[in-house]
Amino acid sequence: MHEILSAPGALAESSVDELNALANAMSLPSMAIAPGGDMPAFTPRGLSALATASELEGWDGRRTVELLQRATAELAKGGTRRLSFNEPADWIDLARG
Image (cartoon, rainbow, N blue to C red; front, side):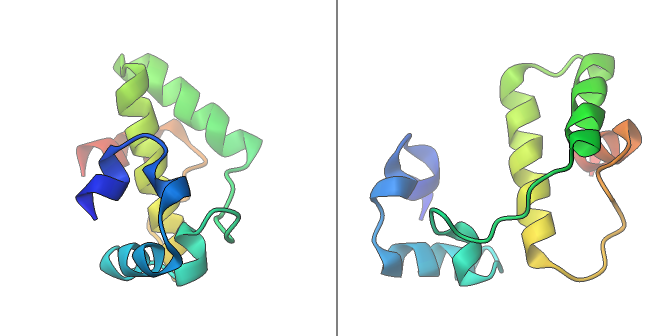
């Protein structure tokens, strides 16, 4: 699993079985991790909030992308969330949590 997440392009080259195993390990729906799957998209407001939080907190590109990936995985889980990711404070809370 670590190889799939750490190597650029490995996700696209992974087998369906590997992707399902990865999704299960991350408690995600199977289709959420597959290329072309039903991954939730952030609204322009949410992305703007991320950009603002990144600027306020001085995050580099790597940190900002990591937070976007964490938030995407969180949204893919479904259910009730405490963070809407529509305000910079939501992203800052995610970074601190």
